[in-house]
Amino acid sequence: MSTSNGAVALSISGLNKSYGDFEVISNLDLQIQRGSIHGLVGLNGSGKTTTLECILGLQSFNSGSITILDKQPSDLHLARGRIVGIFDTPSLHPNLTVRQCLQHARLLCDEPTRTSEQVEQLLGIDRFKDFKIRHLSLGNKRRASIAQALLGSPELIVLDEPFSGLDAEGVDDVLQLITHLNRAEGTAFLLSSHQLPYLEQICSHIAILHKGSIAVSDAIAELLKSTGTEILLRTPQADAAITSIDGIATAQYSHTDESDYLHVQLGAMDSAELNRRLVADAIAVSEMILQRGSLGKLFREITHEVAP
Amino acid sequence: MNGLLTAMKCEVFVALRTFSSKLIVLTPALVVLFQFLLLRMTEAGQSARDNLLGNNSFEDVVANNAYGYFVDGLSTGLTMLGLLMVAQASYSFSFDRDTGAARHLLIRRVSRSSLITAKLIHLHILASLSVLLLIAVSYLMSELFWDFGAIVEDGFELIGENEIRAEIAAGLRLALIPLPAAIGFGIFISVCAQSATQAVTTALGITLAIDIFKTMLGDIAYYLYASFQPSLIDQSYLQDVSRLVRGYSDVLNAERVLELNTWVPLPTLVLFFIATLWLLKRKKM
Image 1 (cartoon, helix red, strand yellow):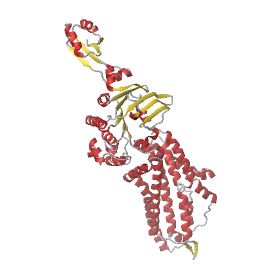
Image 2 (cartoon, chains in turn orange, purple):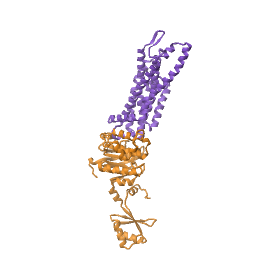
Image 3 (cartoon, rainbow over the protein chains, first blue to last red):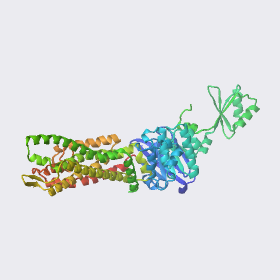
Image 4 (cartoon, chains in turn orange, blue):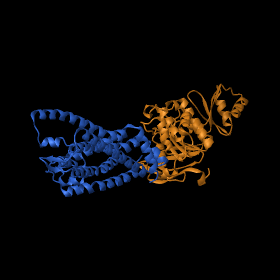
């Protein structure tokens, strides 16, 4: 990770935040690079929204420092639209129409890069343009909320639960949009979500927030590499298979579950090599299931949840 | 004051496209219009009866003078406007916070102090428009139904037109001076409250409570801006003007009260504004 200030979009150091005696965020450190898509995940109540609100200057914090595009959270308005926040609850005026909301948001842009019509089409809400916000479904409110952000050229977009309330098509649209903005315009994203598969799909980096501080934060490829791959084997020669596996340095037998699957952790060795060795030892394999490392698995490991 | 102009533009943009701001501007004038129509209908019947009976007294001279009705119209309209402005001021910021609309402004272009200043200015513009419309409607309706002129009884002028106009101007000025403080109070409550509903009920509740209990407060009441506003239990100078312009000479104006009317509300507004800014800096948005 580069530590040059020019490359850092967001830097949080030693952040602490308490509500009375209850410590929500404890000594949180996080760095987000310009042009990256950074996912922030955590259990309910782990402090994700509070962290985002502190970053965006919407609430104060007890100690620590936050620098966002070289600005302090309390001076975020000086960034003049280079930072945008989109929240779980769509922050729109309920008595305005979609088009009026977008025109309203244009007043906040120094140089709007897209017209209201363009962002309506981009988000698929052009047919609702004359609907008042209060008459829209939650998904379309969220689309309108994201549309507002796209009128200017933000360098960093902070999204809290961007996929909640969206249908499958809406999720695809948002995923495509985030990827497109990131690649075409270099927009950095900080996404807070419980939808781990979606984050795994688009994020370049992931930070896992647990008990108020960052448990891990790295490039997603590095994190998934560390979780390793697991193979589930079913064989009538279980004992022989375990002996054979014990002879392989990069594979490790873990346990046998109640369905008689042997759980084998794979290191650098790929599954084809394990398969070759079992065949060479004349061990009949009736079933072989490959379980790659996933964000969900890593998340559960860190938060001590039991995998289903 | 970063982003004050942007915040103002946003306020005006929303005001032009939503109903609540229009309601503030139009309601006092419409209420007064309705009041005048009712009064005229009632008076037409009374006048016909008096003519038939041959009654003609000082009361008729007073009854036909438009200045008295004009001041009554202003008094009714300003009472309504005072309550509306407190309600709207307490609603405006808390509603934007409830919906999250304020967050967009704060993150993208506008500082907290600019946001609240823009709201304060916007509410003053609304109040000014409402007062102008109220004066116009009151004047036109009074002229339509009655005649403006001096109060003359048995050839003796009790009060001349110039004097009447001067008294009305003074009454109007003294009645308007507390209005900014009422707006400041509403905004202060708006920032204190947890929700828009809580803000409006609290602000109106306190305003009505002051109105009811001000008579029990004695001289202390004169240090409350609300004591000088035209209200349901009206002790404002405009109430006295209503009698003065009708030729009654039993109005006693304590100079000290008029001075307090002039000097208490504006510092109160400043205090509310400073307290609002202080609180807003610490408030979760």
